[in-house]
Amino acid sequence: MARFCILAACSLFIAVPQGFAQDLPASYIKDNYTRRTYKIPVRDGVKLHTIVYSPKDQSQTYPIIMTRTPYSISPYEENIHRFSLGPNKHFVKEGYIFVYQDVRGRYMSEGAYANMRPQLQRKGGPKDIDESTDTYDSIDFLVKKVPNNNGKVGLFGISYPGFYTSAGMINAHPALKAASPQAPIADWFFDDFFHHGAFFLSHAFPFFDRFGDPRGPELTMQRRQSPNYGTDDGYKFFLDIGPLKNVNPRYYKDKITFWNEMMDHPTYDKFWQDRNLLPHLKKVAPAVMTVGGWFDAEDLYGTFRTYQAIEKQNPGIFNVLVCGPWAHGQWSNASATSLGYVNFGADTAAFFQKEIELPFFNHFLKGKGEHGLPEAYVFETGANQWRKFDKWPPTTVKEQIFYLRAKGKLSTEAPGDKDDFDSFVSDPNKPVPTCERIAFGMPQAYMTDDMRYASRRPDVLTYQTGVLTKDLTLAGPLQAELRVATTGTDADWVVKIIDVFPDDDPAKSAGKPMGGYQMHVRSEIIRGRYRKSFETPEPFKPNEPATIKLTLQDVLHTFKKGHRVMVQVHSTWFPLADRNPQKYVPNIFFANEEDFTPATHRVYRSAEMPSKISVGVLSKE
Image 1 (cartoon, helix red, strand yellow):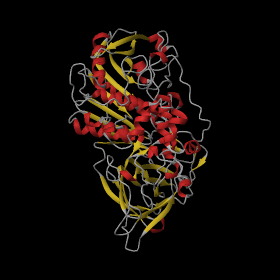
Image 2 (cartoon, one colour):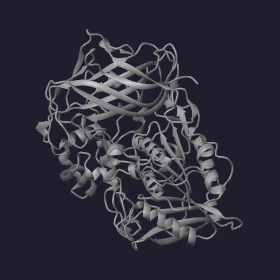
Image 3 (spheres, rainbow, N blue to C red):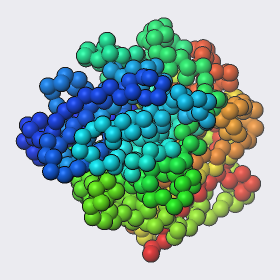
Image 4 (tube, one colour):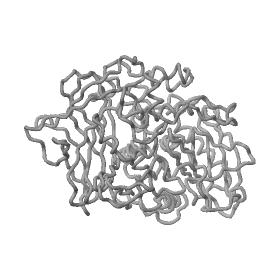
């Protein structure tokens, strides 16, 4: 992942692949493409800095493929070309006009920048703007002013640029024929920073430390120095900070505006609702390919919700979902054969780039060949194979319920009257680590990591099936329903789905024996105060049972014969999620040190109060 500007702490910085292998001479782009710079005027008079690379060969016309980004379109020097162009290495030799644009208010573009600029419900006047109008006006300029284009435009972008791709599809310009939002941010409250109300600390803190400062033209040529936190141990660093109200006096010094806004808006209020793009995804481009990775630690929510919103709100358009066995943006890498210690059996990125991404754009922008794409082109992890479906989730999925039972058992048989509850002490001063790895931020590989470290902790409840006698394939979303109680007045709840390998598994991966490996397949967290509403928090009543409903993102994973299915339940997950004091305070971001207190939590598993996981089992077609 290092080849395309990946940050271990927070890979929202992925804009476009900056250095994947082109399999071409280093001078190929300079020898075969002409670079031009434009200041594109949009409807309110602001000018957007745009760099265009056009083929020198004028014997034919070419489609335009465009990326809009807040992460800089450097190099800005006119005599220096980019290391790579387009979504992947195949596009350079194929022949496209490549367009890169600094979004409004970033780097060399004029105007004021807004994080996840809210989409206007309706335009009050001809000069009202949002990201869709900036895109529309830019496309209109490009097709009229850039020489030798064929009048067809495509958009693509990963992560934050994926948001700009999605926004650019809304009320699409007639020339916009294809768009590919990839790992797009869709709703920042649920996507990145507040997973069901729990704040993803080790994701947000390093991101805004690098991204949150103003980056206008006066800073464009300066290299941003990486902060020195004095340690690579994020667990220690964030625990030493103490309550999050200490971040500003110690580190940010009130210079990061959006951090302060997040601290003032811990609930899903109008501030966050306005930054939900999903309801606005209407009248989009004629063809859309939404791309994501099963092990995307940042924007898996955005991938599936974007696909679903487009499907629901744009009947009849070409709308395909692609999901591979990838971390955030890993599909644009030079190779993607594994993540952490889990091997996928082949270079899945190379397959995607050549067999999926290139045919999609070639078909809709060049009229070249059949794209051959189904409604859903997804990789089945565990079995390590690509699958095609005409609907997602597949129509052959059947619901199966797994119940938490006594003695750590996970069973399809509902509990009897004798089953009762399990309990554990949750101490926010000794929280369950994100993973075994020593890392400052959010290590992407935690999404496939070995969970044995957690199974052995007394503050983690573990339930597992017997040894499977045949393969079990889960497809679609997972729904956890826990009946719980706490001696405190607030608590977080984490649910993990884990694939337990046989103890005698002979395989090794990256030198690690896989016998007994507990592969993290899917997980989610909810801040208990939001169990009834993300807008209106509510404390727990001590020792009074309550219901927690938690949706985990989609999967397509096969638990092989001889494996087991495991469910883990715990309350802290640090420093991935910030610490819940477990004493209800109006705003956790301003809690005091003395508010953080241990509490005893119960998870019920009786006939009257069962705790369960509902999954979709894919029947063999």
